[in-house]
Length: 266
Image (tube, rainbow, N blue to C red; front, side, top):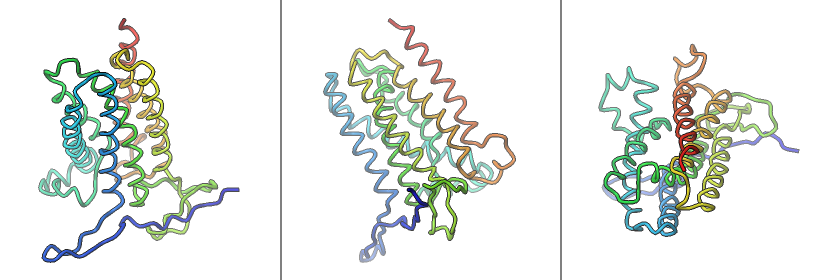
């Protein structure tokens, strides 16, 4: 029988001193964040090779993804969750190492980044690229949520379920929903679904099909999972739906439209 899990893992892997520079700390979140892009690049190489696209383009699209994800996620957090503070202290936006990345902002950043990448590339339309990139984005989401787990952040609400996590690093002695794990597991399953669908049809995949499925499934689940999570900022306590849910609704609607369009195309 399952019992509550004592989670006392810290965010740091190890630290070492560097002359002049001081102490360098390697953290789980940073390692997992970087791993998401490395693993994603390997998968994209396989996809591009299978469909006869220039494999050299994978390096370019990876660079676009890294920049777009970081900028979008950081600006999303600052403008969606704490606009008053960051607009009053704009230089604080640059302090990414202090934490604060929003998945909805990352999504918007990726959409813009892929648009810039796909311009003028023969055989790689905007939707074609999005259909392939969401495969690795889904898997990357699992890496990021595991990083949140190691940081004991984006925590769930108190619970008495048998699989609840006690986050001792937060000074707590009661169990919470492991919301990070819920989302990480969902992202892995979504990755397997998208990769399986692509592998079945490859270049014959209707444009927009995988992107539509990704957006609808991911952000519908995000709306559901937010009911199990603590609000990130205080003003959300006065809202019927929190910011994560409010931002997810238009994403789902866009996904439905694109998905329906993919079924209309011959």
